[in-house]
Image (tube, rainbow, N blue to C red):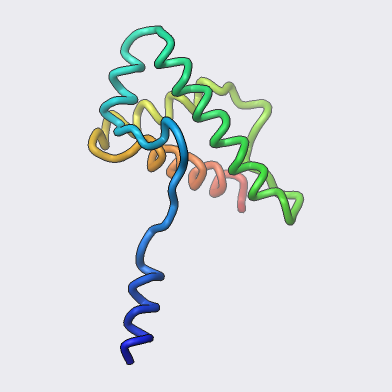
Length: 109
């Protein structure tokens, strides 16, 4: 019985994590995106790397990929900007995971 409870607890936990700028809060992301500068460009490059990694992971065992290519990358940054404005205390990685989820749904994955 204890083993079942422990297993259920582990399944309920979210073990997603990322390395780098994804660990900053959405409030920090938003402060970087109010004006042009190095921090803003670093955040954007982190996001593009995160999305590239997600795309690789999703397509590794299939032909399916996230919607990519014809979409202006600024749309992805805009998604994160809007998410972070609504969820300032969450992490930027949470916004990136939400974007991946949205792209997966749009792509039928």
